[in-house]
Image (tube, rainbow, N blue to C red; front, side):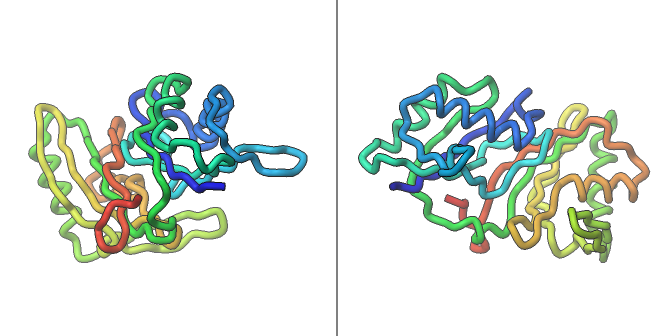
Length: 218
């Protein structure tokens, strides 16, 4: 049995598909191919499928991944995207497949592009930079079990800040992984509270998932 990691993108209208529905969508897609995927045993067999860092609803990405197991070690891994893409819905596309290099525990950070519309994007950029320059940015992070205060300042890094006609775009590197995961939503909520602005229409794209050394998660 061979463990395989498949990288895929999620764009446009597909960004509104929840993680649970993405799992169902991929399972149904595999069922329509001849890829020899391994099913779990028991009363409710399902395709073995694990995601390293599930994407939040409403976000786009070109660097998502999940692991499966093949029952046939001789099956050509490079054929997986070729056979999977014709049965995937619009906005979801398999990019490549290969044997995993990193474990999910190796993920420590992720890069995001945040695009905010505004009639005066330069002024918005000034406010956003001033927000990031604060000595401390305290937010309340909610989990299923509890709430806790968190200082975002040491957990994020501004990679670039630019303005286009009617848009401000910020690229941020945020702490990510199974131990501590900072969502762009936390940053946007804190910025909205600080600036008094409303975040009515924001586009967020995950650009990269990275290990501690800054290398891509593969």
